[in-house]
Amino acid sequence: MKLLRYGEIGAEKTGMLDAEGNVRDLSAHLPDLSGAALATLDELRGIDPAQLPLVAAPGRVGACLSSVPNFFCVGLNYALHAKESGLDAPSEPVLFSKATSALSGPFDPVIIPRGSEKTDWEVELGVVIGREAHYVSEETALEHVAGYCTVNDVSERAYQIERLGQWIKGKSAPSFAPIGPWLVTADDVPDPQALDVSLALNGETVQSSNTSDMIFSVREIVSYMSQFMKLQPGDIIATGTPAGVGMGMSPQRFLRPGDVMEVTVAGLGSQRQEAVAAE
Image 1: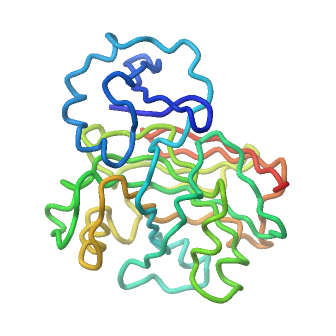
Image 2 (image 1 turned 135 degrees about the vertical axis):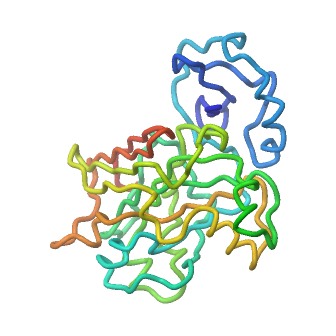
Image 3 (image 1 turned 180 degrees about the vertical axis):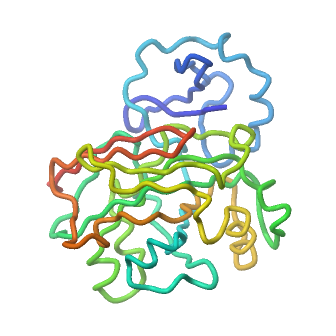
């Protein structure tokens, strides 16, 4: 299933894509696509999308989850990205968080924060937790995954690296977490380690890789994280970005107002964001 939320900010409805890619109104069966609702996904599988009301003009597509308890990220999870960052490949997953107030729709503008000169892009595979995971094994880790989504882990590098404290400061500005357009349920993603990921900036491909190149797989990440915390339904894990970010270019290249990012994970849908200056 491909599930989504459509409508203006704060008034989104829940939808499902049919076989032709049309949006169907799912709100009578699922009023809110949130973490708690992920427990009902099995009930939705019996619904024929063709029997749902057709949404002729869905308009804006919102973040594919209405509320996210925690937004976790894995750093340096592609070897070439670690190299372009001037760091050794990690021996275990590097974990950090984004504020959930950074969530935005996949086609909403990315707002460059006031004073920022180093706002950067990162295409990532997003993992959506479907049921609690605590002390789970690698063998059973994927049983706790509800689905997957495309993520752009937008980052302000000066705030992240040059200021004191944790990376979260450079990861959490409003609009720095576009997710979607769809939440694709796990049964429609037979192998999360076989997905092409790419990002084009102003029409030029700057990131192009495959999740098979991840240092730590989805099952390893979920199992590892569950040893330190209890993952909750609706938690999102952004699993790392490949080489090609602006920070790694020579000379470095960062977002300026008017720049356009097109962000794709195969089978999970594409995003498009224009960078705009904060008011």
